[in-house]
Image (tube, rainbow, N blue to C red; front, side, top):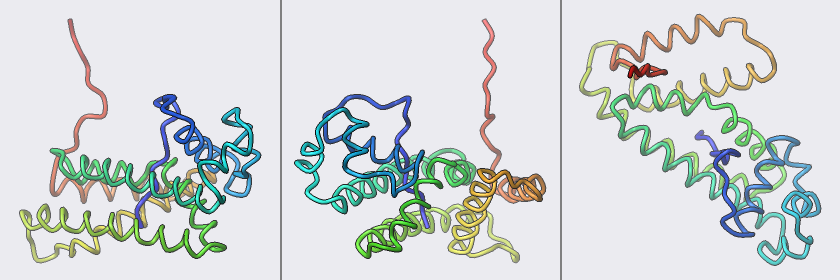
Length: 204
């Protein structure tokens, strides 16, 4: 399952009331959980009347679906850039272990337990993300074919499941086994590409 991209607070701009309502809903879900993202709470966060929220989104399900769909499109855009980069496997892995994306995805999964439309939309977005990953991984792994190579769909599932698990456990303060797991992942990725340096030193 793919991530639902969470808006970067530092990068938010006032692009209109509707977008601010979407941003507020996502932030409330991240910080306080989906149950806290009520029309009243969202309106308070944005600084508008509740009627304004309902003007743009007649029901809370409409609002949740709009946040989810926007997040899915943001995630697909970021994923396309990652898979087209010089180091697509490392970029995809970095995306997967993003804690904000994982947290928002988990909130939507919890919300989806009570709302079929949310569950269906979440699954549809995840399938689109997975299909794009498999298409790119098929090409990448084909260039390094070996007898012990894993199928691209298996690699996609493993990256998603391991990355999400590590992210969730980190948030809970669970780190046992993480260093060796990360080392194993890095060794696997290095079979196919060298990662970009995480920091770049500049000299005058």
